[in-house]
Image (tube, rainbow, N blue to C red; front, side, top):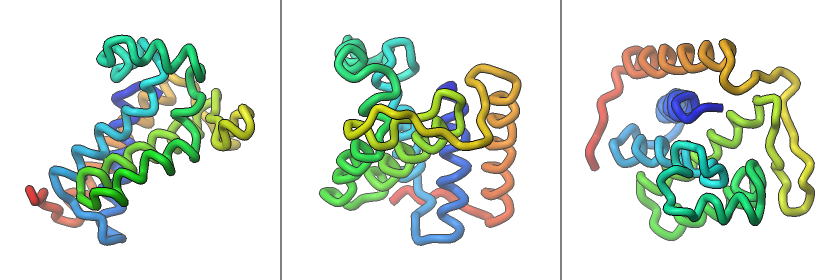
Length: 161
């Protein structure tokens, strides 16, 4: 999934979550969702986030490969300890964006190694899309429309704190 689709689908999912749970619709949470939705691709030097890591991305890819450790549920759980440590809207958003990224890639044809490092087997949904195709562009448009609809439908206003 391209970075723009990760951001759009994560924002749509996170915004919907704010309407059915106590997740806050705040600048901090939404910012965390955006950043978190990009972080798993730190294992790909040519990704949006990978191009901004001053070589760290190359090291991670060399050690674990693309869609390796950073796309696993174990790493997400460890990453989510940030929320339990700081318990603020931003770290909650980071955790949510991160898991939304993994879920998004779960629906791609490549799949994700959910249980890495215990197994390198990649899991995927029965219905998948191919990255960079018309299917993914359609998903991007649907996610953007859903985000706008949810904000409008539920009259959500961003809170700063």
